[in-house]
Length: 233
Image (cartoon, rainbow, N blue to C red; front, side, top):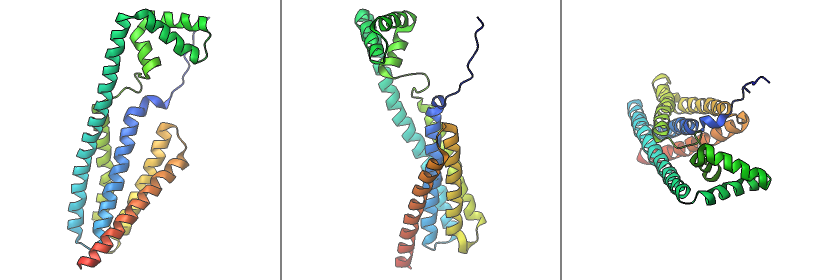
């Protein structure tokens, strides 16, 4: 009997970098766009608005990179500690670990005899890998990668923040707030659609989510900028 390869692709393999990339780009657009809208609403000169935006881009990109690296490194440390503990238990009490694996398979629907046979074969093939995947939920597709997450967040934050910055230079001074808001919301809509397609999720739900929070953030910062600009003026 000939063997065929099933050409099935899943989105879970992209979850590590996709989550960090979407978070970074979204934060770049929302935080930088909102800051620019708030500063511009206070009626300050265009140059000061631009400088504020550049500072927000640099600070935000570094903050995203550091935050992702630290948080994902903590996850990675926890995974390594759990794997080391599991490896020690496999060396000390393999029979108990084999029984534990069989019990997991029984709870997932296998008959006791089949579960014991499956546990035996999985232990013989790759005992630590079987326990990492089936007991701890650690797999190659979802394992923590700190550098990947930090790089994806920083780069996509920069890309997201660049859009409202460019709109500062191109928009007329009288339409600066509106132009930045429109460009930022358009970029958020595109990001939401791309993220949904890449992750295999419904596009409409993703669009509504990012547009709601982006609009709310810019409306609040515009209100603050207008309030303080009027008070100072």
